[in-house]
View 1 (cartoon, rainbow, N blue to C red):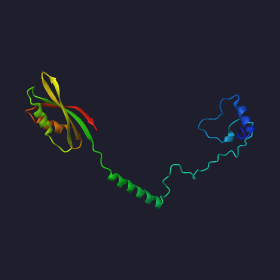
View 2: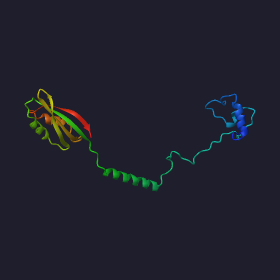
View 3: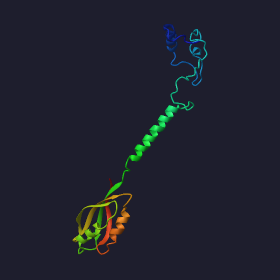
View 4: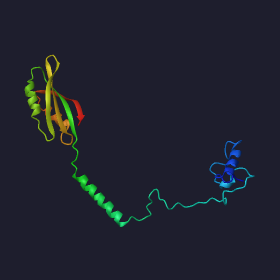
Length: 184
């Protein structure tokens, strides 16, 4: 039983004749048989002994198993490279997170001195706070609001702190809103 040697023309002819009226080679999936056990029964098995030859492929270690000891040279080199990486990483300055904030500061009425209002807002000083441009935007009925830009360092200055300090000027400020908040 078997197809014979499939590397020879005779073996290929036996296989071709067998598959002429069958669409597959018989056998159950998952059942491992010797190569010579497949095919027609009247053909002599010329594939070898019929037993599967299971060789251990110990010569190639594709996944780098851990059972081998790391050489002293490789260990020293790895430690040296890790130390170089850590020292290089420590020299880098930390990235400072900054945000650009656009504030709307609303006065009590149209008689509020807007120049004094802006002066009061700009008088707020903090580490990590830089005031930018400002403009007066009409709200309605002659009332204008102060729109002012500032850049803050996120770790040092928060919007809550800004709101508390700006609304502390009760004579000039009715309310304050954050119109835009963008990370830089």
